[in-house]
Image (tube, one colour):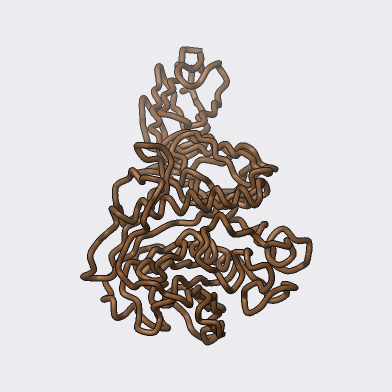
Length: 444
């Protein structure tokens, strides 16, 4: 419900019907919106000052792989069709807010930090920002259904990963009667896709960093119904708590993260504790996973942050569970996993207990050439190939082949050359590369 004191900025809870869904979003459950009860101006503007400069180039795609491995928060600047594009102005705002949230979170909990999706840019690691223009007109993104519509907009552009929370700074008109709605947050629940929206044409004077952090906390599960000081998805208690229903005009730095550490963060109760959310870097529990790649292929993880075309090392929260997939290139195949992976297809590993994984790729076939000197023949265990005096065939790589030399009457095997050695009649070649062998027969 709305705070009856309209002079005080308030956070309100909106419950969508249980069956309401966004495209690909599943049941949205509870969606929260943060409002400012006192709106000073509706002029389209940018914040008066910023402290960070984003140095990247606008893109409508998610750059891969992520600099930080793990469940990310991906930031987007979204504008509806036919609206002016002010990405060059607001990119710096998003970068500034992300840095402010990072510093604030580390101040509140030195063992945790929000895992923002970063990219390696010319000036170093900064936000992997997406600039996205919708196909929908501004009118379609107004009103009570705007949150659901935004889920559809993101899905249409491929931003629907269940491992990602999306932070959208929406630069579009606000609906009449919703001029004081600063942001909304919600999604598929703490473990699924989530969306935090900041309406940058509304709520002049309210900290966009505070709004973004507040809505992100909603996507991570704050505030659970069982919280002792909970009230309609927020905390009714210390007014400085970021999840208090009255957000005010104070900067993010004036807020605290769960003032009593008993409602949604860092508690020992059996209900949701955001401190354990995989979207936070556990600075005190980091572990490395090394992937050794040999041959023409690459290894990817289901959780963003691991894409190895050659040997690489990534750092994760300890105990993160990953499903690794081997992706051969061209006409190659996965020969085998090694290390912590032994399965034939995808491989599940837990970072910390597993430290090294190997993936060997090779061409699907290698050429086998066999020659005969003297009188006799050589047969192979594959395809019944008979060589006299010579033969060749393309055989599956890394599938051993047995060669058997049979001398003609009055002749004997003197020995082998090439991939086979010695004078035993049978020889096995591993077919781990292009292979050649020669059997030499002499008169008995």
